[in-house]
Length: 473
Image (cartoon, rainbow, N blue to C red; front, side):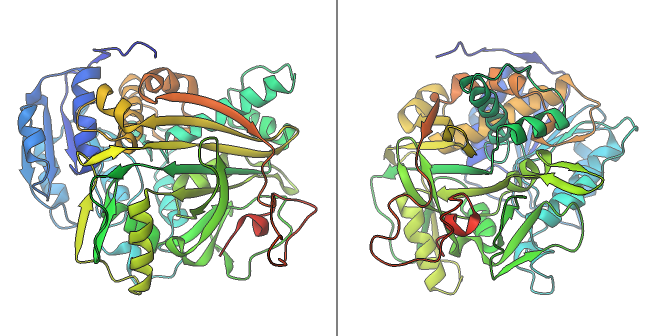
């Protein structure tokens, strides 16, 4: 275990935290550990009361207000001045509008995902493309002004999206070294993309298996999860999305290209919560995960694209493959059976978790050594020893937030940046002490292994890493 720095960076401005659910409460203790700051400098804005006791314990002012299209500018204008920091860990608050506000005000910004205003994920007046993470990302990236000095706004920097983009870079380095390649550490986007191409990385899974269990099981008409239920359900309602690789020979029957932007991704005309894919982690081994849309599937695929005047020459297929805790899986099945009508009650697992871990990493496949998983194996018991008010899942997100905040404060005029644009070693140095066992494993597993024993399937035996071979339903 690496040493945890009790105080990391002096910050004499204000921090406003929007949203104070599982992640907001998990981040607060880390703010006071890693920043030299007083409680008077921190304010929480939330519409829920369930975090008030935590805010009170740390002496932090908490304003019970729902941020809306109508009130966000006047409310935030009273609380933020140039040089302050807006940390957005909310649901149903427009990230793009907050970024615009911060850019005009000279305020630093970080979020863990790009959110629309409430109802945006299920707005039936919008097309599936317009409700996608691809569309939300494109809207945020349009705010970039190359060559203009802009305050730093870090997009989507939690665990995933966030830390996993840095895991990908470290995994690429590890694979290259293990293959005996004499490389220098890439520094530019083009150099990282060329390295992935040289290694023949065809697909990257964000492969996550959550095994945390609570003392009491899920009840009927109840949604149970180890992190924001509203956030998870919103993601599950969006269309399944993935970065689309240049090696793919088969286009899924329900897949659609977007008619704008970089064209680095596609979406399936179905909810991510109804789509499963095969994947692998070292402890869980092979399993079926949900193809939940996440912006890292798009940003990593885009970042690692090699293109010239003839078009795209290389791009990996990238997608999230998520097996949440067992009670969350049951909750999703029940939700789907209810035709996506939300359950009457929710239960966020925290203090009642009795065992388990979150195994979160990246599986890079297609190279000469088969497939390689690199990531974090963090148990609930380790997480509780490290930081109060955390689970294994929340701590992986929270330390990604803190690392992104440290980087932003240290680089205050970097403009709008995604995780891939940040020095991965800088982030890893801060986060490693909090991630439990950080390991790399090679495997000969492919989505075709042990397949076809019971029934015949339409699969491409020539290339096990075609998406058609990964997809289950």
